[in-house]
Length: 115
Length: 111
Image 1 (cartoon, each protein chain N blue to C red):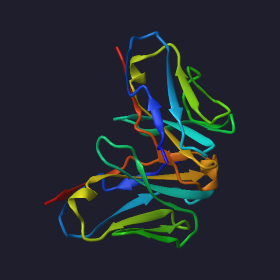
Image 2: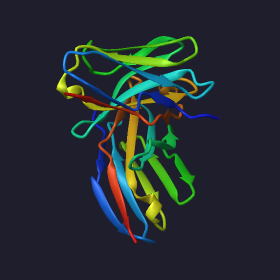
Image 3: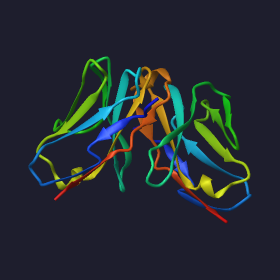
Image 4: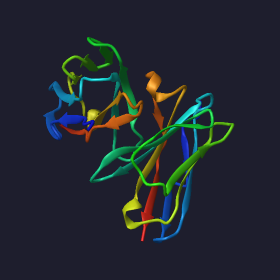
């Protein structure tokens, strides 16, 4: 079974631009969660989508948004990029919601650099 | 404010020795605790999902225990091998139904 895939793997943008990251979950998984990893803050939860609905959202500004499609693929968008948005963005999929005690499987991440 | 703490932050262990580290979390509104292993240049890999007080789980040489009443979990590695070198993360789900991660314990196994 193919694992979680994320595209692109690396991205360089400038301040003020916007970016869209994509995540394809493991086949049959209906929940996709997004995380931001920075050296200072560690892994922080962005949001979780299940059956095309946002189930939960972390403490991030409204510039961070996401969506999930009917095939469970998910995208996250960051508008008006700031230098502090430079990070590794990880997505993870699970059969059902994380709150239900389901194991998560992580993708390789997208490394975003904002100049 | 929810706070998941892991100790120690880093650990150096001789190959063949056993080791353990701790994840502490608020004991109220507990739903589940996850342990992950994150090797450099790889994705975090799920080790255990634990939900019940007193849970003990084992995978090969790695095991974990959970005490939800006092708010801690221990991860044990028996007979450490170089391939065990990684950052070990714990994360809890409490109340708000979202995972909150600790800062991790960076484990280095010296051959």
